Image 1 (cartoon, helix red, strand yellow):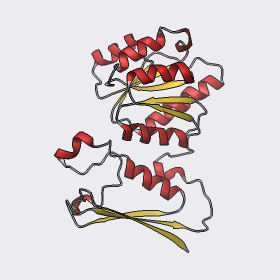
Image 2: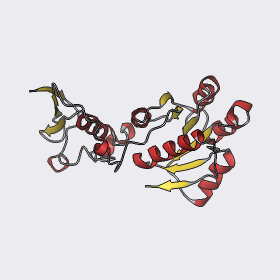
Image 3: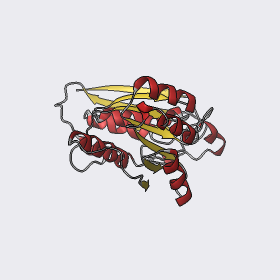
Image 4: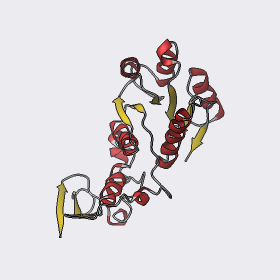
Length: 234
């Protein structure tokens, strides 16, 4: 026996050629005029992964562009609970950590997606959406790790990082830059601003989770979490 949940919208619709791909990570329907308010293309992928972790499945149908979409979720009512983390492509066990994290990005879809991934690992995750709010949240929450977008409104990520590093409470925080730029000068600029790591968008979820888990396990072994900046592009 299973529960069936149907979600119907009247949005932009999905071309038939895209129906088989909409649940893939970072896949977006190619609507140029919608890109200004589009996300990263991770929401449906995360939904599918979470549903499959609970033994369910999700499917999508659409009449085509401009005709809305229908999503059907099927979940077993009394499943045998099994922590199947293969749904998110991790070969062994899901990486775990118990950090207090701050995720900062003016793209709310991105913040929500990254926060969901990090909470699945066992972290206490908080969110902010601009550079001024980021510094205030870092001061108030004293997170272990800050994932900080560089292109933020009000105060960019470089300036926010410098302000955090200028305070005694900011010296031990691990700062991870999230940016669409990955050239050598971009890496050098983030290093000079005080970042420990430089991840280029779109960030591979497995890379991010592995990095955070490695930092946590280093901390538990009494090793310094802050290291020379590294760069990953995926």
